[in-house]
Length: 335
Image (cartoon, rainbow, N blue to C red; front, top):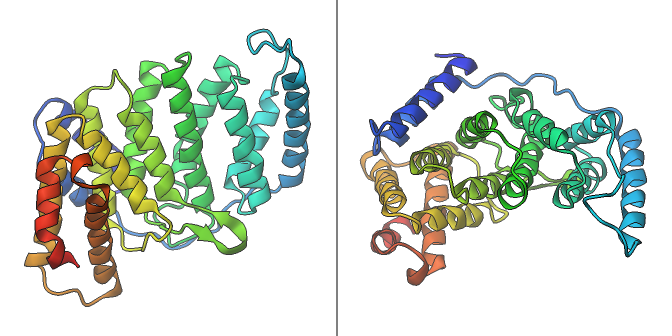
């Protein structure tokens, strides 16, 4: 058994080995070995925001101001005097952890999406927001525990991060090399560790962590200057996390993940070969192990079957030939 900080270090070491060309096919098994060293934790009390109404009032005030500015025909995004106070930004972003949808989803998330996409945060605020969202306290809050309300903090942190990565890629770059390096490490570990597959949760609305993972990983795969080894490392983490998942994904998450993975597999034979190798290992798991007899084992089987079927649904013309042919050849076994 290892501690969380030791797990983080093991993943960083794996990334370094991938970059040095020391490991390729064994990456998934080594990640699985590391993940299995850290035990599940008992459920503890989740700290939730208590100032939702105040944050919502600030959001509404800023939104009204933005709407007034946008109605002005002479509005110039580069010369406006609109500014979100740092203290308000801290209060608003904390609402991403709120289980109540009007504070979290249509409140904080919609607002942050607007100000990021419309360039209404300062360079310094974008850097601070990125650091906040990739912190251990955000991305890994209660992640080793049974299903709990911390899923909103984790899931919406990674979702807003996808918007920041898009802005950094398409508009003016604000992330330093050091910050981007940490983003890669944190997102990869989060994708490998997340086990809460809930989509829409009754009155609280969307959790949707695996769709949000897909969105953020998609942005990483789109980075033109990121070396192939780092993209390989992130791909390995996503596939390793999915391999260990024992909860159903029923709100389109697998379709999104497959879309993102097939995209990168089409970019270079390296990724396609690694994906194909993993699919073969997944099938080998089913062939060599005893028939499933627990709910966990059955769910893992059906998750993998769903992954294979989503590849087929994308069609022969949109999937690397060797990957499609292999999945098509094994489809009856996985049905």
